[in-house]
Structures are given as structure tokens and as C-alpha cells.
Image (tube, rainbow, N blue to C red; front, top):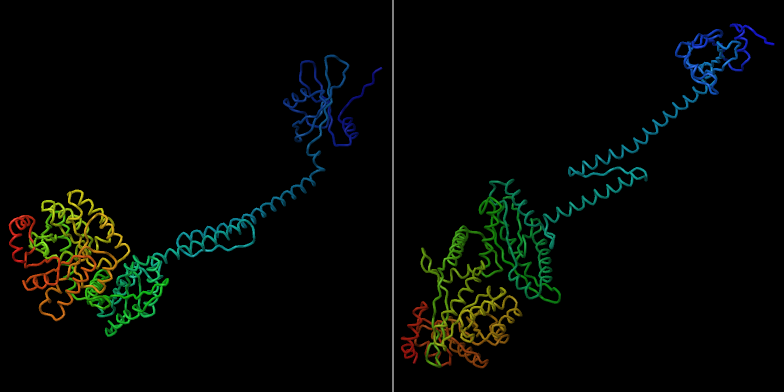
Length: 617
């Protein structure tokens, strides 16, 4: 038995109401081989594409999504049994998504509102966080730019987070850089030892004053001063004592030159700018006060030192209108003060500039003379009174200038010593004298003068040894003559060199004996082979009361110490007779011969020895 009912639209709506959810139901039919068509239901007929989709999901256990005339919907297709094998039927249930989601719209709205609020909160928090990060970074960036441009920069420190610590580290770095720049600036313009302004600061100060007072006469006096015999302090007592002495002198100068600009140029050289405000009367008074304050005794490491200073003064606009000229002229005045005996104040004069230019030209000519071989050795005989013959020759330096003729050694030797040219000149003279002496009889020695500059430069003993080795001259035929000035700078090192010469077998003679204040102490320090009595005693031998007694005392002293004596500057027969009577070992002077060239030495040794001997006898 089969029951059947007509499922029309009204029946389908009734079936729909049986569901708890708002479903729409419909029946689809098709004949075999044809597509489904809607035969009943409350929804619009599906289109061909939808029908194909329904056919594909017919009998499936899961719903599928279907586009309908009312919008997107959930769909479920189930086959229905039919009475005919040629027909197929299907039940299609449709649940619109809009209806399915309707109960959740308030929740969606709430979630959307919450999400929007969360997004706003995130945006705000991000903005706040960005502000907290970028603002300090921006401040740091601005501080870095100011620091790079040389300005003083400091970043504010807020809180204790990483950025605050970074700002604190930056501020510390900026302060360190500022302090370091201050130290660098201080070192660039101040002397490290004394703390006084240095040469750079002095030049700036002087240049500034000259520019703002251009054309104003006697607006400023420049004092250039250095310490007398400072090198001797360094050499004998050591550089630490010398540095302490410089610091003490600087402090004294600060007090005495209060109100003036004081600077240290280097070494023991100081400069003072005295601002005169148009009144020239104080010029020179300060110099005398400086000499008085510097000359007070000092106690340094148990050593009592009495410093002294010489001062040269140049006046702005009168003696120079620029820094270099004014400083050069003050230095020339200082050189004049040294020549005047040290411990005095000397003012610049134009004649000093002329002398300096002439001296500079002489120095240039002397350098050329060394290169071109213009220097020559002359030889003056020393007559041995005991053996009645020529016992030695003294080598004397001569310069025959191609334009000026013969230049006196008194003119060019000081220049050579000041410039250090005496060192190569002395080495050449030693080699040449030794070479020439090898052609003389073996009993004739050669005497060579050695400057104090040579003596205190390293390598003198090596120079002499090389000269002896190259020439083949016996060491005992070489006699080195020195003056007591070599003892003024380092007696210990001097004695070491002298003993080195003695070990080589070279004789050592003390020249110009009697002219220094401590010649006797030198005789106790070193056993010289000979002392040469200065010509000043010989010239007064016959005219000044007591001169004979002085010469006799020198000869007796030398004899007691086992030393020979040579009288210099013998020009009269009466002087020769008196010296013979006093027991002098040998004599030297124009009475016998002026200095002669090397070629004439052979003539003198061969033909004139007997004649000279008869003259002495």
C-alpha cells in the first residue's frame, strides 16, 4: 500500500515550520538525462550553475554553500524515492546566511567595537611609545649636532631607562671631550713645565697689541732674557735640577713683572711684554729689577745655585713694527748684553742689526769656504830653550777670502763656534796638521788647538785617533792645546775626555794660563804636560812691577808639578833673556817667526834652525 500527498507550496511552508531554524524547503525533479527543475518550495528557482552544484552535492552528508536569489545560503540536498524509474526527485533545504548570522550580529558589533577600541588603544600606545623613544633620540641628535659644531652640548636625562642611561653616557662623553679640548688648548698655548704662555701665545699677544696700537710710539717694550751658564747647570747637576731652577725663576719673574705679559719661548729663554700706555719712562727699570730678583740664591736638592740673567730690550715701532722684527732685534740686544759681560740690560741699536747682517754673511761665506777648501793651516815655531832648537810648531787656522783677503781668526772663529762649524773645521785641521807633521824630523811635535765646542761634542777622541791612524804620526808627537773655558761646562766629563787623550799617548797643554780665575784648581784636577803663559804677562814683563815675580811663580809651579812651560808673545830679546833666566822651557813669538805656510816649515827646519839657535844663545 502506497500513500501519496501533493507537496505544493503550502505544504512545503508547513514542513518548513516544523524546523527550529528558518529553513526553506523545496522539491526538485528531473527526468533521466535532464537537469533538475524546481517543482515545489518557497525559494526562487536556482539557476543552471546552482543546479549543477546541487547535483554534485546530492546525497552528501555535509552542507554546502549556494548562491540563491535571496543571497548566499547554506544548502543540503537529499534524494527522494520516486515511483518511476525514469524520474528522480530531491529535497533541497536552504538556510540563508543572513538569517543564520542574525543572532550573532550584536556579538559581531560588540567584537568590532572591542577590536576598534583595542586598535585605538594600540595606536595610542604606539604613539606614546614612539614619542617616548623618538623625543629623547631627537634631543640626542640635536646635542650631537651641537657637539660636532664645537658648541657645548648636553642632553636632558629623564627617567632611568636605556635612553636615559644613553643620554647620561653622552653627557659624560661631552664633558670629557670639553675637558680634553681645554687641556689641548692649554698645551697648545702654555708651557708644560712652568705653566707660562708659550711662543704661540706670545706671538698672538704681541701681534694683537701691535695691530691695535699701530702708529703709537713707545707703546710697548719687549724684554728678551735667558739664564747665564744654564747649560752648565744641566750638564753638571742634571736636568731635573735645571727644570726646578726654571720653575723657580719663572715664579720670580711673575712677581717682578706683575702687570706685564710673561712667556717662556723654550729652554731658558723668557720674554716679557711691558705695556707702556705712551709713557716710555719705565723702560729699563723693569730690566734692572728682573736682574736683581733672578740673581737671588736658590737651594735645589742640596745644591746652592746663584742664577743670573742677561736682558735685551726692543721698543715697539721704534725697533720693529711686526712680531718677527721686534723679537729678532730684542734677541740681538740680548746678544749684546752677553758680549758686555752678562748680567746687564742692553737696548737694541741699528748698528746691532748691521753687525748681525755682517755676521750672517760671514757665516754663509764660512760655509762656502769649508766646501771649497779656502781654509789653510799656518805653523808658528816653538823654540826649545833647553835643546836650543825648534821643538814644535803650533797649527793656526787662516782664511784667505777670495774677495776680502785674509780674515782674522778673531773674526771667524767665534762665528764657527757659535754655529757649530768649528766641529768639521777642527776635524779637518787635526787631520791636516798630523799629515803635515809626518814630513818633519821626529823630535818636532805638532800642537793643535781644540775649541771648547769640539771638546764637549761626542767623538773628539775618535777624531784624533783617526787622524793619527790615517797619517801614521806617533801619538807623542801630537799636542792638544785647550783653554780653561772647557772646564766651565761639566768638569767630570771634561776630565774623562782628557784622560782618554792621555791614554792615547797624546800630550795635553793648557793654553792662555793665568787669564782665568781658577787656573790653579785645574792644575790640581789634571796633570797637564805643559802650560802656556799668556802673552799679557810677557808683554808686561819688562815694564810692570811684579810681572817678573808672577812669571817666575808660574814657572816654578809648573816645574814642581813636572810640567813644561811655554811663553807666548815673545817679541823682544830682553824678554827672551829674562825668560831664560827664569827657567822657561820654550818660547813662541814674532821674535823668532810669524806663522808660516807648510812649505816654509821645511825651509825653516833645514836652513834657519842654526840661525835661530844663535839668536837665542
